[in-house]
Image 1 (cartoon, rainbow, N blue to C red):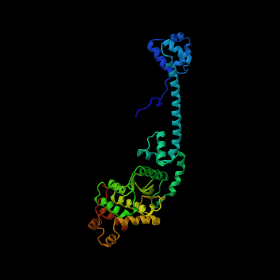
Image 2: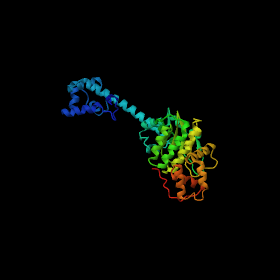
Image 3: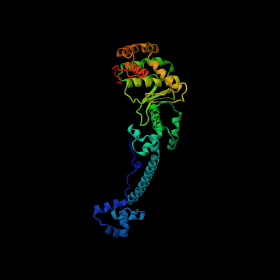
Image 4: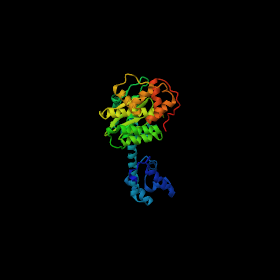
Length: 366
């Protein structure tokens, strides 16, 4: 791509007096001699050389004749200098305005987090446009109204965590932004059982689990965005409808197959039970090991969806009655029967028994 030199703004403007001095020096002409030659006061010439006075048409004629140079050179040098001054001043004013705006923006965004994730560069002119894009704003003043958005999210209640609404909004906006760049197949609510079978097989094998999960969900018309959460934003998942497809955002703050499977299936519960029927609803689930018992009906439904689709309810009832259910061999037996990773069995058992099961099972996502 070619760049027109006329479109470039210099960092400094070079006064034609500097070039005159260089020309006199190169020819061995002293300033006093030159001022006498062209008939101007030495102080006036010195002011031109020091950039304190401009070169007018009369002076350009004198310089041209005395130095045997085209007079237009000096006219153009003066004009270009004045144009550069104007461009630099415009550039400075734009920078000053951007800095002033950025000082206000900083109070309403998690700046360090956005820099860490590579969205912000530290240049306010660039970063203001980036914020407008990510937050889908026409103007920066709209940032003032964003705090109200958190009140529209359906938050899964937690008895143990609090959340910074500014960071929460930033994270959800980033999920929206990343999801807008993804292209997936058409969503079909009728193929949920096929989707569940494929996902359980991925969990069972646990090889390249996250990338394979993304690909499978894409085939079924669901966008999956995995994005690290900012500070004071202990979030597990986020589900909403984007144009013609559902979107699931996960933080994956624990590198565990059981955590990943349950969180994903809980969000899938929101997809198939809730957001496809009410596309204006957004669900945000906070990270906690102790979810309060008064959570709403929709969260209970999403939990039931996750439990029942990860493990056949009849098989679970039979398993939970077994006197040796907390034995490693029993967990692995059910895992093979269900074709699902044994860590998922162990995690649910530990939760329901409110007990740490001692079975030695690797929970890591691979």
